[in-house]
Structures are given as structure tokens and as C-alpha cells.
Amino acid sequence: MEKEQKYKSITPTLFLFLLVFGLTAAEVYSFGRVPETIIRVAVMRDAERVNIGNDSDFNIIDVKSGRRKRLSARICEVQAVPEGMKIEGAEFGDFVRFVSQSDGFMRVNERQYRDTLLLRNDGGRITVINEVGLDSYLYGVLPVEVSPGWPIEALKAQAVVSRTYVLNNLGKYGESGYDLSDDVFSQVYRGADVEAPKTNQAVNETAGKVLSSGGEIKRVYFFSCCGGYTEDISDVWGSNITHMEGVVCRYCTNSPRFHWEVHITPGDLEERLNRAGYGIGNVKNIKPAGRTNSGRVDELRIKHSGGVLKTTGHRFRMAVGPDVIKSAMFSVRDSEPDFSFHGRGWGHGVGMCQWGAKGQAQNGKGFREILDFYFPGMDVEKWSY
Image (cartoon, rainbow, N blue to C red):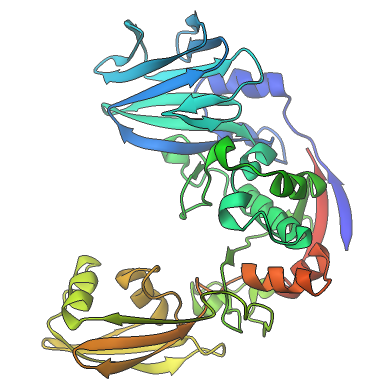
């Protein structure tokens, strides 16, 4: 079911005024019930220096003092110094905003971004933050999270889920001065360079649409391939959310990771687990001791020279490496001299299966039907803000 919600929001003028005083986007958003569409994404961290450029004139604004400097089209080097930042031989404070004077993209070491850039000196290291409109941000997310060549209804489903994820995670890194990171710990974001017409179309055709219940935007997740069954969120993170219970999915069998196999030596496993803080000895044996309703490993017992380690399949996967152990739906054999893992799916398994969404779209399902399948009981609402 689709509804439209209209809520009070702050004006763009007030938004920019508040940004000048260094508030995070989440703090700014608290002035209205629904977030404005501007979000802050950290696109570079812990840099000594960075090159910022534009193909047209742009302004450099010292956020705290209000001092401005206009530069013609060029690339300029920004260097962290004890008092703030040095740009083109001039010293600025520790918060500097770069604003294009045209519709051109700003560049960070040759990668292009829409809208504005905010640079912060954090203890002698530079953090680069892209202040970007929500849908412009999604333009740079969708082509990385899914293939632009997929059916449009699958792309539209991804756009709605990604938009919902953003609005539910505003201020996730508020203490660091931004809302989201540009990696897998938020959503992978690569700016304007990766934009594609078809994924932009999916964002535009779902403008404002989110998943919600009772007038509130809810938590949602997605992942690559479920291997036949999505996972109940309570079996992964312990949360009890009714719209993210596991479902049987028969639509992702064409995923290249529907089946996977990997061989890992005992020494490699020991090193990876100890790096994650487990403190184990030589690995002797690995056995699943319990499974969830979806077939993923619920309890794993690892016998080693110092005793027996008990952990969950999810924690084991994250410790060894989520790109190595593709999912917690696996079996394991001692196949001298390695341990042989055979599994299905890729990702944590909670929420929307991206390859399943593709399969459903290929079978003629629309994006609302896809979302109803993976998030039963949720509404697709259009929020005007």
C-alpha cells in the first residue's frame, strides 16, 4: 500500500545557516520532524593532504570565521597544519567548505562528487565530507550495490530500501561530524563517477518513497544473496523486528555465490581468529553445534590446543572475513591439510536479497511486490520533505 506523508521540514536557508555553525546534519534535522534531503558522507579520512578541484570557479569558506576566497577552475592542495588547513598558501581554520559556482562536480583526488565538500582538521588529519542531496547520494550508491543492467523493478526496490536505510541511520557517526561512511559499514558510495542512467531512473521514479509502519521509518537491511532462505534478524543481531523475519526465497539461484567453497589452513584460521581477539591455540576441529530455522550456523564449536571456543556462525564469519566465509549458511570438513567450507549465499541474510529481487523482477514482479515479499507488513509511503 502506498501513502503520502507530509511533515514540517526546515528551510534550505536555515539548513545552511545552521551548517555554518558546525552542527551535524542529524542535529540540524531535529528542527523538523522529517529530515531534509542533505546528508553528510565521509568520503576520505585520516589524510595529511588532499587535492580538491573543480572545472569552474569555486568558493572556499572558513566555516567558523565566515572568511571566503574565490578560486578559478583548478586543482588546489589542502594540507593539514597545526592551526587548521593551508590552501593555496593561505591558512584557514579547521572547518572549510568548498562550494562550486556552477553545476559542475567537485573533485577529491580526481573522484567527482555532487554538491559541496566540507573538510575538517581532526587532530592533524583531514576528513573530507560530501554534503549531498539524498537522491544525489543514491545516484552514487545504486550502481555499486547492484548492477545497472538489472531489471528496473529490482533497481527501484533497491532505491527504496537504500533511501529508507539512509533516513534511519542519520547521525550514525554524528560524534565524528558526519552521518554516514562511504563503505560497507553504511552503504558503498562512489560519487558521480559511477552514476548510470538506469539506476538514476530508479531513484527518480521512486522519489520520496520509503518503507515504514505506523508513520515511522523502520530499520531495513539488504545483502547480496540469501542462498534460498533469508534470516530472522533476531538470529543475527538479537533484535525482534516483525518485518524482518526469515522467508523462503527461490529467486536467487542465478547468483554466482548461491553456492561457494573455500579452503582455509588451520594456521590461517588461528591467525584470523586471534586478530579478532579470540586468543585460541592451534585449531584441531570445527563443528556446527546448532542451526537457525534458515539453516545458518547458530552455534559453532572450535576445538583448539587451548580448549574449545564456542561462538555463533555470524561472529565466526565476521572474524575470519565476510569475503572469505560468504555467509553463515555453511558446512565444514577437515580435508587435510585444510578445512573445507561449503556454503550458500553471500551476506548476513537479513532483509532484502538483492539477487532474489533481480529474480523476482525477471519473473514480472513490480518493486512493491518485491518489497512486500522481503518486508511483510511494511507500507511503501511517499514522504514529502
